[in-house]
Image (cartoon, rainbow, N blue to C red):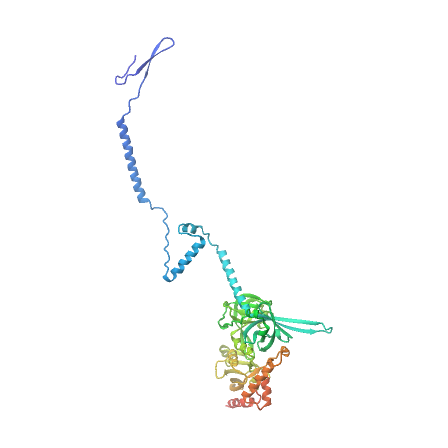
Length: 508
């Protein structure tokens, strides 16, 4: 029996027959048609929900967009003044053109510049510094020459043996006839021939002019006629600087032959300016450096401006230190001028030691110059000065030291007078004395003068200077005074007259 709901649609009936002849009814149920209204409402709900969700998401993004995001860095540009704007723009254009920059790709190119390695940058600075030092040294070498003293001798078999000594020489001046060169006397003393190697390699013969027996500084001269015209342009006179401005730690360059080899240079600094070399009638400060040099080293010290501030004299080096030692150039200028002009050198003939205020307070010795020795046949001995005397004034100057004594003496000429105030220890203490001393002349002899032409030897010029001294002192009628003047001593007959005021003060 088949039960069906009346509301259901009528199913389609299909009758199938089996193989045995029985028949069955087979029904197929069709789905109901879609409800269009419900479908439309559901779509509208989805659209509305999407709109609401999108609006909410937009509001949330709007208010949270700045949180956690890296802001761009802005650096304000420098303000360029009107005076420098043109140069700044030109430098910018030059740098951009050399690197191929354009306005469009400036930021990209900036990012592509590799970082600078500090080690390489420091090495570049180091190379540039030494390149500059080399340029300064090469400029100074145009005023340096190599002086060679050549000596020849024959043995029993008539074989000639030649000996040569060399040192640097400094071109001091050109007097219109000769090139004047400052060098060390040990090189030219006793030489049969003096040869000078000029910048460029030209060798010219030189002659001895004059030297100082205290420092052994010597002036030789090369006739300008001996120098080819093409080589004269390579030679320049030295630029003498102010060594009083050199202090501890000042950078210097040793040029010449500091290691014993010509045309060499070394760089260093001043370690000390307080070293003192006591000499006859004065003292000199010494420049000690950290530059390693030979005991036979020679040459000059220059500053970074290329000015000569010291003359290397290794024989003044204390205790064979192995470093370069030089005499400051400023205290030598008056001496170099006298030597270059072949003028007589003033001389009184004492050696001493400074007594400072602190030493005076501790030892009760008067402040001044303690005379340690007086040279034989010297003006000081002829006047009456003795070892143990304390020089307390010179020409009414109450503050006196060996350096001040030397400076005042270098402003004198043989025959001039100096008023010397001393204190001498007696039984009751120190007694004041005053002497009027006649300045003599330091006579320096050199074996190399024997080979000089007549009329140009220092001996002849010294005799002329002695004659002038004799006439100025008013002792032209005394042969004894002339003899003492020629030996660099004050006239012996002036001693009694000068010591009389001292005797009166001693009595008082």
